[in-house]
Amino acid sequence: MDLNIKVAALAGEGAFSIGNLLAKLFAKLGYNVVAYPEYPSLIKGGLNVIHVRISDREIHSPVHRTDILLSIGKDGYKFLKNSLHEDSIVIGDESIDDGIKVPINSLIQQHNLNPKVKNILITSVLLGILNYPKDYVDRAIVNMFGNKSKEILESNLKAVQIGYDLSKDHRTDLSVKRIDMEKVVVSGNEAFGLGAIAGGMKIASFYPMTPASSLFHFLINVKDLAKIYVIQAEDEIAAANIAIGANYAGVRALTGTSGGGFALMTETVSMAGIAETPIVFFISQRVGPSTGMPTWTEQADLFQIWGAGQGDFPKIILAPGNVEQAYRYMGNAFNLAQKYQLPVFVLSDKFLSESYFSISQLPSIPVETGKIIYEDIPEVLSVGQRFLRYKLEDDGISSMPVPGVKNGMHIASSYEHMQDSFTTENFSERKRQVEKRARKIETIIENENPKPDVYTKKADKAIVCWGSQLLPMLEVFREIDFDLIHFSWLYPINIQYTEQILKRYRTIGFIENNSNMAFYRFLRMFVDVKADFNIIKYTGRQFFPHQILDALDRLQEKDYKGIEVIEEDFDTYELYTPWRY
Image (tube, rainbow, N blue to C red; front, side, top):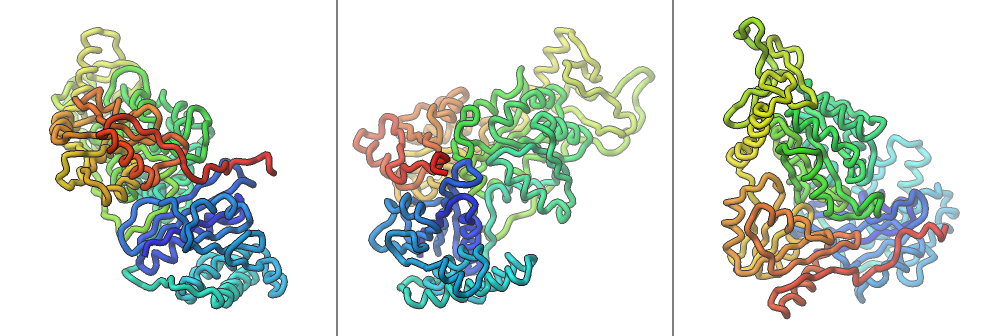
C-alpha cells in the first residue's frame, strides 16, 4: 500500500482541514503518513492543494503522482489532471469533467444539512470507497465539532453517513485496515515547538511571518498546558530583544521568523555575540529576495544566517532534516546556547515546517546549563574588585551569573569590554576578548563532535544534501547505488572528520533547493571538497523524488559531470491567480 491522495479546493474552502483529517485517520490505523500543503499567498481565491501520502512502509516525502483526487470545485481537477494515471480515482462535485460526481448541493438541500458540511460529505465518499471503519470517522467528527453547536455536530455526522451510503456504488479493490499501533501526526513546526518545550523553553516571542508563524500558533495553543509564555511583539526587533532579555535573566527563550523578518533581528544577533548571551533563533526559509513568493519553499538563506551581525563572533547553525531531528535539534539548541553562551540558529523551510508526518514517540531531552550561575557566589572578591564575567578561560567560556545572584554583578552591553565587564577601547584587551570568544569554536567541535549523517551502501559515489532535502533523498536512496551524506549541523564544521568522509568517494554530487549552490560554496570555505555534479532547483517547490532520479539518469550519460537545473515538468499552472476573482 502506497497511496497518494490529493485534496484540492479554493482557499477558504477547507482543503487543509480535510487533508489533516485524512492524515490523522490513516495514522490511527498505523499507516505511515506524509501530508504536504501547497497554496498561494491569498486569503480567498487561488487553489489550495494538500498531498496526503499513506503507506505501510516507511515514507519521507510527497510524490507527484495522484492515485486519488478529491476535487472540491472544478479547479482542482483542471490543474491536477496531468498527475493522474489510468487507475486514478477522481471524486468531486458536479463541476468536475470526469470521475465520481457527488451531487453535493442537491444532497445538502434534500437532507436539510448545513452547507458547510460539503467537505465532510465528499471526504466520506472517499473513506467509504477505501472501506475505512466508519466508527473511527464518527469519533473524529465528534472530536472536531464537539465544542460546536448540536446542529453543526449532527449535520456533520449525517454527512458522514450519506457519504458512506453513496460509496457503496463505487467499491474498488482498495481497502485499508489496521496494520500497526496508532501513530501521531505532527507538522514540522509542531515538532520544533515540542522540542522547544522539552528543551526547557519558557518564553517565545515573535512577530508573525509565514512559514514560521504556525510554530508560534502551536505554542499559543499549548501555552497553559506547557506553562510557557508566548508573546506577539510589535515587530521583529522587539521580538528578538524580548528573547535576549529573557535569556540574560536566565530564562530559556526563543524568537523566530522568516528571512525578511530576520533581516530586522540582526542587531540583536550582534548584541548576543559580544555580550555572550544565550539566544535561540528559529528561521523558516521561504522564497526570496524580499517578499518573493511568501508561501513557497527554498534553501537560500544560509549565508544570511552565517553572516548575520557585524564583526567576528562564534555561533551555531543547525538545519534538521525531518520531524525527529526538528524535535531533537530544537530541544538541544537551548542547551547549546547556554553551554557556549552564543546565538544558536535552527533553520527550517516551508517544506519541512508546514508538512505533516506520522511519528510513534519522541524521547526526553536532558537540560544542560553549562556555566550559567543561578546560586549566590561566596564572597571572595577583594574590595574594589568586580566579578570577572568575561574571564579569559582556556575553553573560551566564562561563568555567567544571572541577575540577582549575590556577588555576580556585572555589565552586559553592546560595547567591547574587559574581563570585569567594564567597557574598553584598549587594543590589547580587545585582542584577548576576540581570541577568547573564538576559542568556543574549538570547544564546541571537541565537545559536540558535529558531523554529518552517512547512509551507506558502501558505494564509491555519494550525494550530499542538507536540511529538509533529506526527505526526498531518503526516497531516492532506495533506488540508487550512491551513499547519502546529510548535514544537519552546518556550523561550526568538524573539518578533519568531514574531509575524511568526503575523500572516500570517487564521485561526489550536491543537491540543493537554491540557485547558487549555497551549501556547497559554504562547505568549500572550510573543507577541501570539489563537486563532480550539482543538482539544483529554485522554482519555489522542493524536489520530488522522481525529479532527482531523472536528473541522475541524465548525469550518468555525462559520467556524472556538470550541473542539472530542475524545472517543473508537470502542474505548471499558477495557483496565484487574483485576477480571476
